[in-house]
Length: 293
Image 1 (cartoon, rainbow, N blue to C red):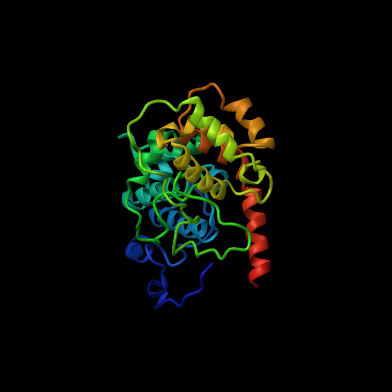
Image 2: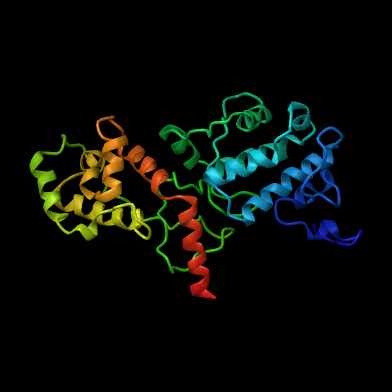
């Protein structure tokens, strides 16, 4: 808990929180309170505290969903009703920016957040939902962290181990790879084009196998370049995706993706969700810290 003096605690509030100074108490950053006796200022402070707390710890996706549900278990519609509508909206937007899907469907915001708490199934981001989120502003009052800091963001790629990582408050968590070649109208890829791509991928080192330190983002950059050279275009990538896979990744593809008419973006989303785990990210981060410091 912060320990400001009684006279200056409002002056030391972090960005985003300061604009709500009149709506919170001095002890706004307490971890917990009693939901049966809490006040409106305590609810506001709890929400703002967790925006800052989760952001500083870089929680996102399944990890954020799990911790958020644990921290807010016991909340009810009456608890949410005490919160300032703008702060509740900011909290909803924070969850969405960091990979926890909360519906935007015209229903009360608090009801949609509560639905995430009470459900035992993690909400699913569809392709259309991701596209909608990517169209939102990248800046917000609390940081410039981007509009979709999730492994499901098709514009993101994980940095290699040992690479310098930017602070979360400065840039999105991952470095975006070069965009794929522009989309051009054409027919389905000819067998000759896929065969030519397979020849290019005779070198197994170019393929993604799903093992530790095997970075899908780096392999995709090679894939985009090779497809461009053999004449396979952006909207045809789903026909050629299996060519770049080997080992565990190839097994996963044929068990869960092949024959289901998924788009290329959905194929990537499923593959990343399976292989780019929180445990791997924590390991990469630990090794980066050891190398840097």
